[in-house]
Image (cartoon, rainbow, N blue to C red):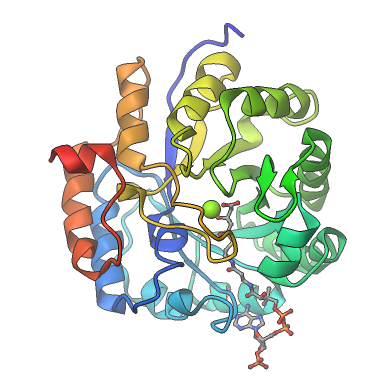
Length: 298
Ligand code: HMG
Ligand code: MG
């Protein structure tokens, strides 16, 4: 409580978390145009793809081509998901600026998502992390289902903390704690942060809220105002959903979250008009309307 307010960094998830669950193919050129337009909005980091099995997530199969084709803006970090050594090799060839490994606090979700137990996933990440470290490539670790699992229900904060600590031992620079099915409330967030902040430096924590129950803005504001968390994942337009979390909606809309922070005295550096312009590049290819409230006003 009583943590000084500070600048906030919003990390763009739309090209990866947003587009990964699209059934119809989004042309690579549309993804490229979208990412290039997002690069002009004040964002400092864009998760632009995933080097995962194309059988598991067909919508990310063109990630290599996307990374090859985008004109990169100086100062913007273009990151990608990497599930294993094979993914790392591809990501390196694609000149990714930062990689993210991903596991979960729930065994069932992890099995369905990456076909591994939590322990196996950490083992699988060991060579990925050591190579990333040797190459001085920034490394993020995701903990999915940190609050609720679509198969196992409520997850104990202690279980989520354990996976966060395993990732820290692996040497990740940052941990993104995920509310994969968008079910957490501010009290769940407080319970987990009370525990995590005893063991994990504040600056290493990012929060990744999906917005299924409409709680994500409240959760992010609580984490920022009460604990000083300043790194938040979000998806422009609120695009998305996780293919392995049935019914879960996209990440919190980046523009709605930026609006909420700015209205509460925070600084995000995001140009909302330009986000709206970037969304125009991708809207013709999306299956669902944007869930963002600001977009509906535009
Ligand atoms: P597996 O079947 O156990 O692995 O999958 P495998 O090594 O036996 O390989 C199976 C096939 O995939 C083989 O091809 C491999 O070559 C290929 P086949 O011989 O059958 O033709 N393969 C690959 N292809 C391309 N790139 C690779 C790669 N690795 C293997 N890197 C694996 C394990 C992890 C690979 C698979 O389950 C997978 O790719 N899963 C990805 C799942 C995913 O991307 N989920 C969505 C992202 S996570 C998320 O959204 C949550 C998050 O947003 C946070 C939150 O909200 O909580 C991050
Ligand atoms: Mg997600």
